[in-house]
Amino acid sequence: VRQSSMQQVRDHSEGRERQYALAERVKELGFSRVDTIDDDLGRSGAGLFERPGFGRLLSSVRDGKIRAVLAFEALRLARNNRDWHHLIDLCALNDTLVVDLDGIYDPSQVNDRLLLGLKGSMSEFELGLLRQRARAAIDAMTARGAVIHAVPIGYVRTDDQRCELDPNIEIQGAIRRVFAKFQELGTARQVLLWHPEEQISLPTRTRGSYGEGGVPVGL
Image (cartoon, rainbow, N blue to C red; front, top):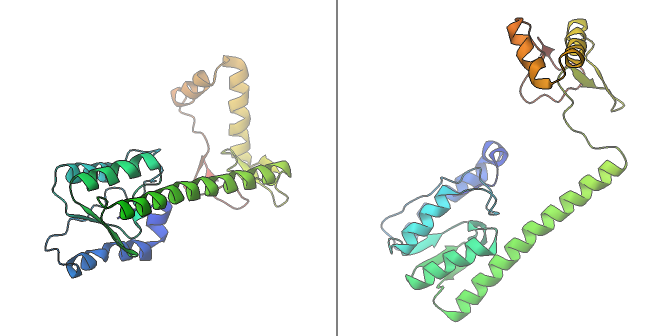
């Protein structure tokens, strides 16, 4: 059971429940024992992050403890060919089946291994294509000045996408004091240490806000 990001874990509960429901599919295939691995919820399968669940799966297959690996989509187990082919190699050596909603594969059989290899290559290509499209979209938005990022604390974004000091006079004073102390002390670290020493608070923003007008920002 895996979802690629914490945002998916929070907002896509239906997909997660469908993955958990695969345990019933395992029983339909005649297996009496089901071990659900969900350690990787919120972790990408692209190989950029450590995945303890995938590592546990590999260890169990290597030790001959698993007769079949079941996933919603087999190619979602790994989104890079290195991890994918390592899993397929271990399954082939230990007579472990790979099962998804499309079928049942035996990696020790040449035809099934070829198909699984193609699935892995397609998955990696798909991920690369998505990244390329996202990068191109960001570059295009940047070129026309339309990229929306969080503005610094103490500032707000106006309706015409400009960045201005927060209308709160007290917060404006706090921001101006930060720049004044930086000119006086010379380093950001000294400015950061000076404020608690003088028991002076800095502006803060509520979690998840991006500095739009009306968002509560306070000292």
